[in-house]
Length: 161
Image (tube, rainbow, N blue to C red; front, side, top):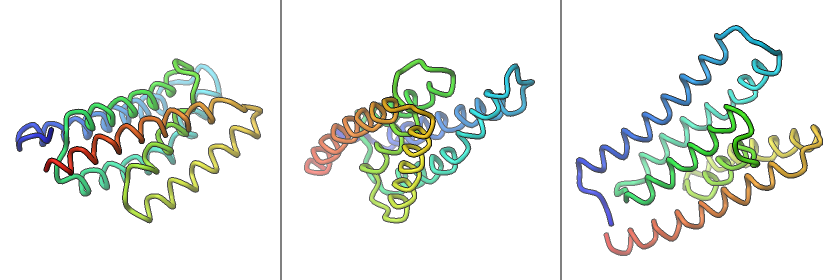
């Protein structure tokens, strides 16, 4: 089911709004007095993902002439799950790995995919160097699962549209 003009714009604004709140959360963490050195490191660790995130958002809005309510919900769910890691280990998966693997399989831009693949490899290498052998794997698995659902929905939407 594709969305009419107003709902499509609402979907686009929802993605921009989610982006804005993620950026605000990052700025608050960077500017707030730190209780531990780890808090600032966590914010700085997330910085490369924000640049990729805005590239993803640009590609997503450019590539999708037709949005469906389900694909918007999937995008927002992935953003929410990935961003929730910024506030602590709410889910056992790596937010970086989740978002990067999802976006790697749902964006058509070759340049974006190359950058996402490099960042995903660096994320995995960093996690392994910390002795974290599972969060990245869970993140990739969840991201690929969401990407598969996204692809099925997008395929059905394009067949109807």
